[in-house]
Image (cartoon, rainbow, N blue to C red):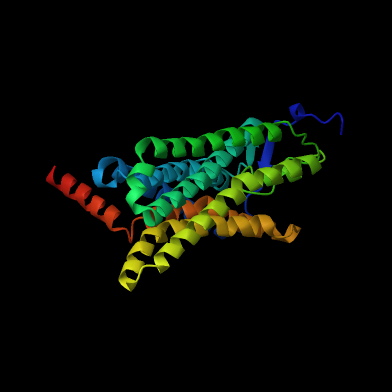
Length: 311
């Protein structure tokens, strides 16, 4: 093992999914559909937020950040999967794998903190409405957004540098459809004890802390809503949170289940299917969640449509 160095490894073999030819065709169509829907839907959200002044609010500013993260998130994973299905070439270079890992971690961690910022925005809007304009002023929300991206940039760089320094001697087969940190760590020939401890500490800060802040925000939000005497008023106020709450549940649900369940060989395919949920399905659903029942977004879309019709 002492002679095992990264220099001997030039590429990884991404195993992806084990399916029949018909299954591969169905998988390609499904993945392509999710990728196109994600990119188109989130580009529409970004365009609407940037073009319509009524959407120039903190909530939609963070939504624009979320859409940007979603587009990048799917673009570093799904095109490679589509390429594997079409060309049957499962190989990815060592540098390409580490780059994919970095981008995936960056977008995923930025998205988690952006969702936390959105939870705080909803807390201030509902629990401190008279102070909302002062608290969520432009420089504050820009600072919150920058913090979310910077945390992702530096923390993902740290993890990627660790992954790049690992020795891979036993195998170069990644039993996943992208270069996942957990899978790479398991594939490495080195002792993972210290690395696992550091990852666990990082998980508390990156995963558990933001989730706890979101939960605390909603405890205060729900407490405030319950004080509203009118049922119509309670419904109106809570409806402003449903889109964000739905996104949080969709994102954290599969991630929590994926990382807390026991490790078994038989669960590998299940892990991949769960990963598809948060890698592809959630980014695809986010624009729909924030638009279908959102009057502001629908009105903005109608304005753009009317403007284009008049042109």
